Image 1 (cartoon, rainbow, N blue to C red):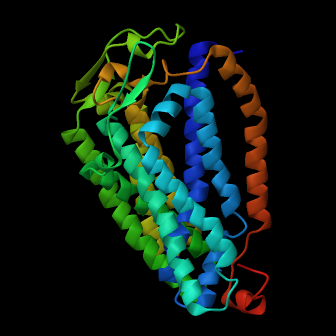
Image 2 (cartoon, rainbow, N blue to C red; image 1 turned 45 degrees about the horizontal axis):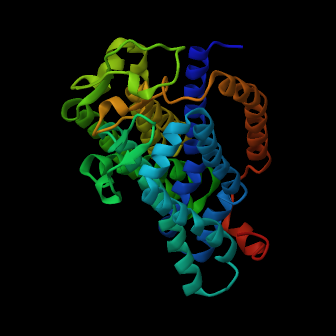
Image 3 (tube, rainbow, N blue to C red; image 1 turned 30 degrees about the horizontal axis):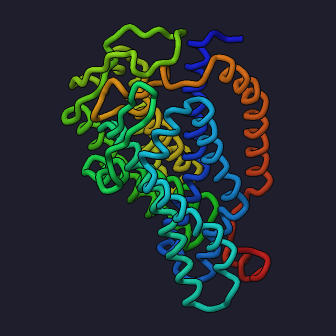
Length: 379
């Protein structure tokens, strides 16, 4: 079995893969539903949008549950600090996500225009809110979270929900919304035709441009206007778990230090920008598959950019930098990581294979004529 240091790195990568998997899969159905009232002008067109993601949206949600479970198992202190510190934000996300199964199941039960219109906007809002809040939460990690640890590892959180809604956090939230909405629009380009396709193409162009502007703007702000954190003491990679044993300093190049120390990491922001440009150009030239590839690269690049900049921090503290949680000192035991690695090595490939198989089997363009010929058998 791997040594403790290697397992910590492996689980940092695995949790990152789960988050990217969630953004790639649940991201396009969140984005598509955000666009639901805008790309679908008639009831049949809106049902076309819903049925492009109908076979997949429930399975896509599993990535979020799995990522949360992996966070709890690999970094229990981070799980405790984040789920308590971001309690109200997560509660808002949870209630927003509650509207999605209700909307999908009940929206078309009644042939009443007002009933369906209300559900359409409820579904739109229930997808927009998580997309925004996830980004706001990520943005606040770079600013530091107001928590501290005492000698018994008890967590004290001094912040509140409204404190999360700062200018930088909101900007990163807009990056998230633009990124996922672009992904949803390029998905709809591949799975629809006629007017829904045309409107989705326009949405992909608009939100890809919005992503490029906000992503580059957030990067410049992070580089020029936000102090980063650095671990100044020597790290014992295989030593006992003690988050308070390190020395952490706030210094201007902190969040950019990794890009100087490991130049290969610069691929991530370049990939995010390149993905946005590809999505924009491919949508303009009506190349649906390339547009979806571009939005996928955009997501991978953006999330890797954030992860590489924060490394090795998972949850920095703004009121006591020494209490900041890193992947080295907020982790589970060697044995726990080893057992989970064996389980992940078996089940993650199986899940990926099944997911790919389900997409292949259920692939195809959904047309208005399909909805009108099967009014009761589809969403």
